Length: 280
Image 1: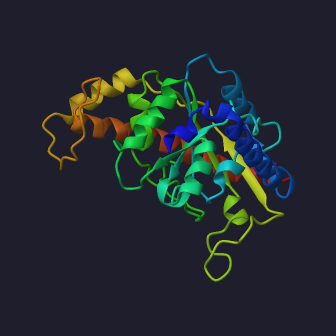
Image 2 (image 1 turned 60 degrees about the horizontal axis):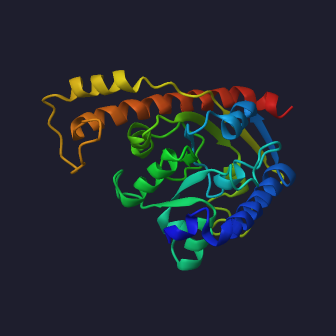
């Protein structure tokens, strides 16, 4: 149902309706029914609204609940209902695309289906690359699944790193860490199930970092050098356009993922120190 995601589908009217409705929902639950505190919001707003033309943006965050997106964008001052500025997001196929109605709705909402466990070269990763090629904003959850534990950021999957490397224009990468959404939509609320509607009167904290710098040329050269004569089980990956074989790609994606993980974990620790101040 990729056709439903096109901007000109039915004159763009269905997308405007869905993005406006989702934006209103996010504003209500993030800014009205709950209390949201955000650190460094200006950086996120600036990169969404006025980054250089054709430069893509990738935001990465931890994954605390099934409502992180869209509630993450519902804080005051953010252009949540602007369908042109709205993010594209990688979404789990088994949750958001399990029937034709869901598929149509989430496609209108600028969601790209991802099959968990299908690898970084699955079909719809090419769609994500197309959006980056257009200079769009893409949000990812590199941990790969929801975790509501108060614990360090988990090991990141390689999908986000592969998009950074394979994008025709290197994207700006902005880390975000949050907490509180696990209280708004707990996984085990009643009889081990989620609540039928989001909960209210909770505190949400969002910590926005600064863009992560990647010297991809140097990182590629190091990956090629370190991967020589390394034996590991082959996954059947194609050689990248920049000439990296599978072994070099593994080294490069690992290095990029570790750098993103470090930035996110530092934000998580910063958030714990800022939390009392944010809630004053």
